[in-house]
Each structure stands twice: as C-alpha cells, then as structure tokens.
Image (cartoon, rainbow, N blue to C red; front, top):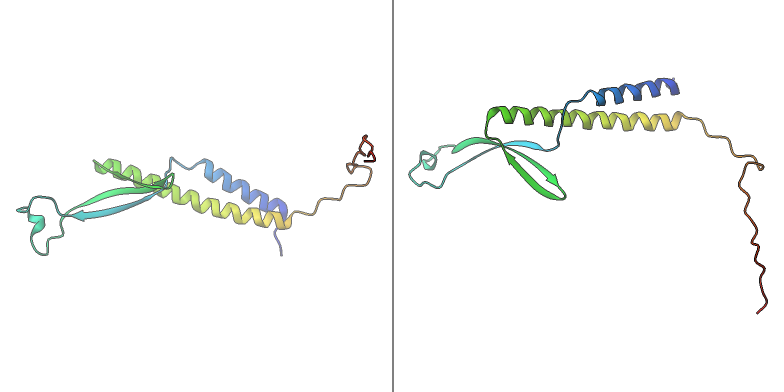
Amino acid sequence: MPESLSDLEQQRSAIFEQMLRLPDFRCGSITATRGTCGKPTCRCHQPNHPGHGPNYRLTRKVKGKTVTETFATPTELHKAQREVEAYHRFRQLAQELLEINERICRARPLEQELSPSKKKLRKSSSRKWRAR
C-alpha cells in the first residue's frame, strides 16, 4: 500500500528537524600518518621501527585544492572528529531527504490544466508587415 502524501510530508519535516539539531560540522577525512624525521641517529631510523606518530590530519577539498590541517592537541583532534561525524550524519540525512522528496513527487497528483479562459493569450503584433 503506497504511503499517503501527508505521511511522506511528515517524514520530510522530521528529517528537516533532525538537520536543524545537528551540531557544527565540516567535511573531510581524518587520517593517521607515521614517518621518519631528518635526524639519521634517531630511533625512527632503526629497522622495524614504525616511525614517529601517529600524527592526525584533516584533509578536505577547498575550491578544488586539497587542504590539510594538523592538530596540536588531542582536544583539537576530538573536536574535529565530532565535526566530521556530524557531517557524515548530515550527508545521510540529505540522502534520506532526497529519497523522500522523490516519493513525494511521485505521490503528488497532477495539477489541473488551465482552462482556455485562464490561459495566457498571445497578443497580436500592432505592427503591420510592410511590402518591400
């Protein structure tokens, strides 16, 4: 049994309400990196040593360019992780909203055609064609 239009509109409103309650968010990915430093006598250059790190970075695109942000403290990292998680929730809600709207569009009845009296009539030109 197809859902009624009012049920679908209520679902859409519920999605909007969830979006309004989202905390601050930003797009990107947080990754952990490890590496060696420039000191040849450092322990990170020893065989089978994993290197320094992990160092966490937020990577995202801004105007087509990749931008990377590093975190100085664990508090900054946790804040960024919450913001990225909220962004993923936003993307999930946006997808649900799109699906609901498509179902609403299919369920909404067609509008009545305009009667001839309500149709816009074309004006005839006041200029007359002149013979050349």
